[in-house]
Length: 150
Image 1 (cartoon, rainbow, N blue to C red):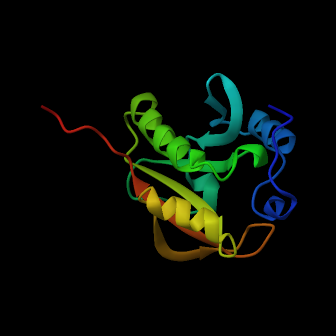
Image 2: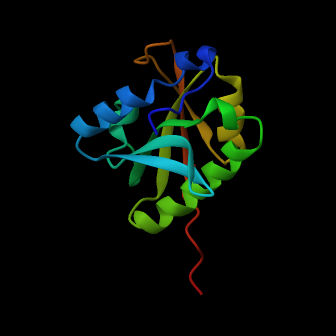
């Protein structure tokens, strides 16, 4: 996992995995997760059980936070980010049945990230988060795809 990284210009938007793992260790409710393809790690993200740690806001519904989502540089450009994010959302439904939504922040300059999250159903909440190290970020929210009861 520690060998995974992004292209140099992407580090403005996502930190190094070793730093994120150490931070997750000290943050109650933060769960680091590997993204695997055929058993090989290709990416990483963190689930925050307390979404207010994402942008220091309170949410009206039970909300998880998604942090540090990335696909390793050598795996990018193959559509794996889209597929991985879809799988993450399905997994969150099963592991956290109490949660209604997922929140994340994405830097305004991160056009590929914004496009990925919009394709997955995330929408801007109308506010900006200014606490990021690389400038203002959109706060985005997406309803979890809970199956319809039959």
